[in-house]
Length: 399
Image 1 (cartoon, rainbow, N blue to C red):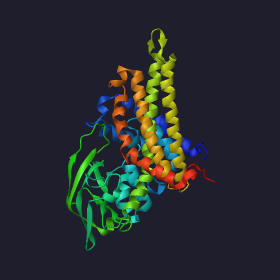
Image 2: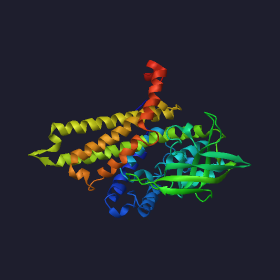
Image 3: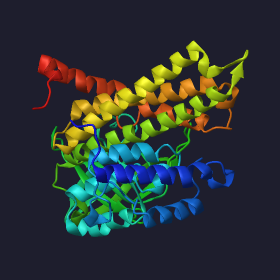
Image 4: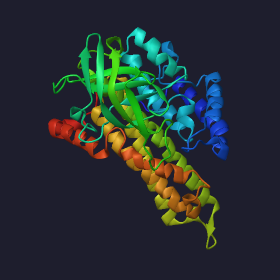
């Protein structure tokens, strides 16, 4: 692959970077800009979103026909990294999870009628969305085959019964994509559906407390007790639920990596600025060999994560599923984010551990990286199985 960005992608990256520096990093210093769950509060969010729209930085990941900017995945990688140098970045540009993944899958596989009803309001920023798949034991987690929630055909409607938990964004979502079991077939037993929060027959049991900070809408427990969904709100064909999940999660997992690299860079920026100014025993910390080792190793790991992410993005842009590449990036970048912010806290000492910098925020957020969209251990199984199957061809170059 060519590691130079196209002129268009570079223009978007530079404008995102400038917006983050000018608007979002200063806003983070204002305590009133945060909501009760330690993310950007509604009023400053809407104000920043309006500015992002006016500057043509809205919804980078969607085709222009759906109100986006039509960036390829390589361009998204460069821009998502820049936007998440701020804690507030992704949601301001309408490129935050789970909305970005839901928008991308609806743009790819939704019918024109479904796109008008379910996609357009999310793309416009009028509503939030959620993806309801994960269940409490004995239901599905990383293995969709363990799905317990059922959808039973009743004329031209489907009746849903089941239990979901840790559903990101559900507390503020209006539009939901639901995965439920429609048969016992191992590959074609799941189907995807669309429903609205005002539909009867389901309840939001609770917003589950976490280490935080949280995405808007939190991580919620849902119970379904007779929710009826018209067949017209079925996404793709009966039995295509696993396919919908794979289409959505392939790119969505990689967008996590893109954003985490921005937070990792921000952590190291804070640390390098501090050690350059802080003196100890007559010498700046940055001049000490041990400090340089810590900084250099973290910087190298970030660059490795960027290369893995860009390679996976490039392969996706070529039409490849890039399963092993996405899984390797997901494992490596999750570890890198934790290492970068842990290193930054260590170098900044008590200041890093305090709330005088965003490092403690990033540290708590980073711990989820090895869990969300598949635990690291599951992804290691994915690419190790590929290694066992492909042998030395595992490392082949594309031709």
